[in-house]
Structures are given as structure tokens and as C-alpha cells.
Image (cartoon, rainbow, N blue to C red; front, side, top):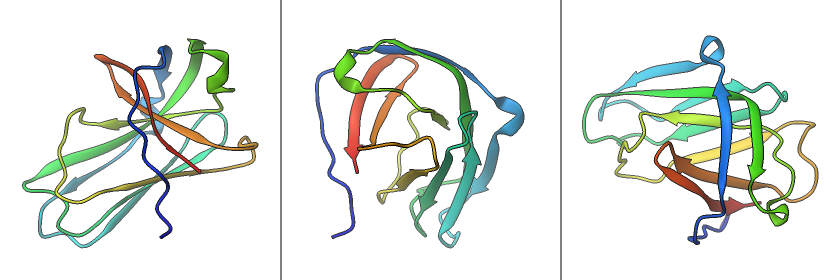
Length: 130
């Protein structure tokens, strides 16, 4: 199975960041759409790819990817490692009927990669490692 492991854990801490709205990509999707792939590049040069399978949505929605800049990870413990970059997926709280795949690639990645998930109202939580 090519799927990365998923972890549920207590909050790791908090991070602060800005959004690069000018580089954001968005797509209006419906339940009838075929599989969709969206991609953005963040300020660290990392390429973030979101794969949404066909039929993943129950209704119409605009899905948006916004690269992050000015990331301050001083609120995370040292064990979390160095934060290389990030992307915000919107709208916050949108539910899907099927799992999505978020991947990241680029020269700024060194060693194991941890993708953190969270929202504006929740602390960062680990969601996968690869």
C-alpha cells in the first residue's frame, strides 16, 4: 500500500504564518467532476500537490490552496524538526466523502518529512510521515 501512515496525537504546539494569496490556486468542484489535481509552489520552493478523487464532494465547493510565507515555528517543540514550508487548504472544515492525497516535493526537503494539519482554531497535529 502506497499510502503514508496517519497519526492522531495531542497538539504539538502552534505556528504563525502569512498567506501568499497572489500565488493561491482555486477550483470550483462538484460531485460529478472527474479526479482533480491542484498544485502550488511555496516561498521555500516546495511543490504542494493535492489530489481529489472523483466523487469526493457531496455538493458544490471551491477548493483553494494558499502557499504559506514567513513561517514562525517557534511554538513547536524541537522534536518537530525544521519547518521547510507550508500550504493552507481552504475552506477550513470542508468534508469529503473520500480521502484526498496531499504530497510535497522539492530540494528544501531533507530527511523524513512530517506534514502537519490543523486549522485557525486548532493547534498543529501530525497527520502523516513519509
